[in-house]
Image 1: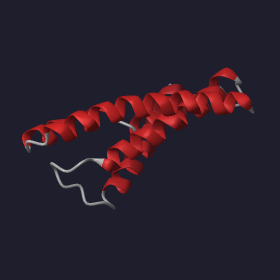
Image 2: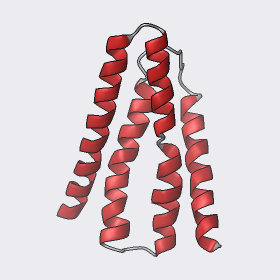
Image 3: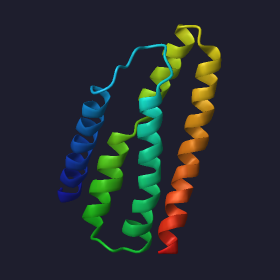
Length: 123
Protein backbone atom coordinates (compact mmCIF):
# COMPACT_ATOMS: atom_id res chain seq x y z
CA UNK A 1 0.00 0.00 0.00
CA UNK A 2 2.91 2.36 0.72
CA UNK A 3 4.14 1.95 -2.88
CA UNK A 4 0.75 3.02 -4.27
CA UNK A 5 0.64 6.07 -2.00
CA UNK A 6 4.19 7.11 -2.92
CA UNK A 7 3.40 6.81 -6.66
CA UNK A 8 0.10 8.65 -6.22
CA UNK A 9 1.79 11.50 -4.36
CA UNK A 10 4.48 11.80 -7.02
CA UNK A 11 1.85 11.71 -9.76
CA UNK A 12 -0.23 14.38 -8.06
CA UNK A 13 2.74 16.69 -7.70
CA UNK A 14 3.89 16.01 -11.29
CA UNK A 15 0.49 16.72 -12.80
CA UNK A 16 0.04 19.89 -10.74
CA UNK A 17 3.52 21.08 -11.73
CA UNK A 18 2.66 20.55 -15.39
CA UNK A 19 -0.68 22.36 -14.94
CA UNK A 20 0.98 25.35 -13.27
CA UNK A 21 3.60 25.62 -16.00
CA UNK A 22 1.01 25.24 -18.75
CA UNK A 23 -1.18 27.98 -17.26
CA UNK A 24 1.73 30.41 -17.22
CA UNK A 25 1.92 30.33 -21.03
CA UNK A 26 -0.53 31.14 -23.81
CA UNK A 27 -1.66 27.79 -25.23
CA UNK A 28 -3.51 28.69 -28.40
CA UNK A 29 -4.67 25.56 -30.27
CA UNK A 30 -3.16 25.31 -33.74
CA UNK A 31 0.17 26.92 -32.88
CA UNK A 32 3.37 24.95 -32.46
CA UNK A 33 3.29 23.48 -28.94
CA UNK A 34 6.75 24.51 -27.71
CA UNK A 35 5.67 24.18 -24.10
CA UNK A 36 4.71 20.51 -24.29
CA UNK A 37 7.81 19.75 -26.34
CA UNK A 38 9.97 21.50 -23.73
CA UNK A 39 8.30 19.76 -20.79
CA UNK A 40 8.53 16.35 -22.44
CA UNK A 41 12.16 16.93 -23.50
CA UNK A 42 13.15 18.05 -20.00
CA UNK A 43 11.23 15.18 -18.43
CA UNK A 44 12.89 12.68 -20.78
CA UNK A 45 16.34 13.97 -19.86
CA UNK A 46 15.46 13.81 -16.16
CA UNK A 47 14.09 10.28 -16.64
CA UNK A 48 17.49 9.25 -17.98
CA UNK A 49 19.33 10.98 -15.13
CA UNK A 50 17.12 9.56 -12.42
CA UNK A 51 17.16 6.08 -13.97
CA UNK A 52 20.91 5.85 -13.51
CA UNK A 53 20.89 7.38 -10.02
CA UNK A 54 17.83 5.58 -8.67
CA UNK A 55 17.85 2.27 -10.53
CA UNK A 56 21.34 1.45 -11.78
CA UNK A 57 23.31 2.95 -8.88
CA UNK A 58 20.55 2.35 -6.28
CA UNK A 59 21.61 5.45 -4.34
CA UNK A 60 18.16 5.86 -2.77
CA UNK A 61 15.42 3.53 -1.51
CA UNK A 62 12.96 2.10 -4.04
CA UNK A 63 10.25 4.45 -2.70
CA UNK A 64 12.22 7.42 -4.06
CA UNK A 65 12.42 5.72 -7.47
CA UNK A 66 8.68 5.05 -7.42
CA UNK A 67 7.92 8.63 -6.38
CA UNK A 68 10.19 10.29 -8.96
CA UNK A 69 10.08 8.02 -12.02
CA UNK A 70 6.71 6.29 -11.86
CA UNK A 71 4.87 9.11 -10.08
CA UNK A 72 6.26 12.57 -10.73
CA UNK A 73 7.99 12.29 -14.13
CA UNK A 74 5.32 10.05 -15.63
CA UNK A 75 2.61 12.55 -14.69
CA UNK A 76 4.72 15.60 -15.57
CA UNK A 77 5.37 14.34 -19.10
CA UNK A 78 2.38 12.98 -20.94
CA UNK A 79 1.86 11.39 -24.32
CA UNK A 80 -1.84 12.19 -24.37
CA UNK A 81 -1.16 15.94 -24.38
CA UNK A 82 1.26 15.45 -27.25
CA UNK A 83 -1.34 13.48 -29.23
CA UNK A 84 -4.04 16.06 -28.55
CA UNK A 85 -1.80 18.89 -29.78
CA UNK A 86 -1.01 16.94 -32.95
CA UNK A 87 -4.76 16.62 -33.47
CA UNK A 88 -5.25 20.39 -33.08
CA UNK A 89 -2.43 21.14 -35.51
CA UNK A 90 -4.05 18.87 -38.10
CA UNK A 91 -7.49 20.38 -37.41
CA UNK A 92 -6.07 23.85 -38.07
CA UNK A 93 -4.52 22.69 -41.36
CA UNK A 94 -0.98 22.96 -39.95
CA UNK A 95 0.10 19.65 -41.46
CA UNK A 96 3.80 20.50 -41.73
CA UNK A 97 3.90 21.80 -38.14
CA UNK A 98 2.16 18.64 -36.95
CA UNK A 99 4.68 16.42 -38.72
CA UNK A 100 7.58 18.52 -37.46
CA UNK A 101 6.20 18.30 -33.92
CA UNK A 102 5.84 14.52 -34.14
CA UNK A 103 9.40 14.05 -35.42
CA UNK A 104 10.94 16.56 -32.99
CA UNK A 105 9.09 15.10 -30.02
CA UNK A 106 10.11 11.51 -30.66
CA UNK A 107 13.71 12.20 -31.70
CA UNK A 108 14.44 14.92 -29.13
CA UNK A 109 12.89 13.10 -26.18
CA UNK A 110 14.65 9.82 -26.98
CA UNK A 111 17.95 11.61 -27.55
CA UNK A 112 17.68 13.51 -24.28
CA UNK A 113 16.81 10.36 -22.34
CA UNK A 114 19.91 8.67 -23.80
CA UNK A 115 22.05 11.73 -23.00
CA UNK A 116 20.76 11.85 -19.44
CA UNK A 117 21.76 8.21 -18.96
CA UNK A 118 25.11 8.72 -20.67
CA UNK A 119 26.14 11.82 -18.69
CA UNK A 120 25.21 10.43 -15.30
CA UNK A 121 27.06 7.20 -16.03
CA UNK A 122 30.20 9.30 -16.54
CA UNK A 123 30.00 10.54 -12.97
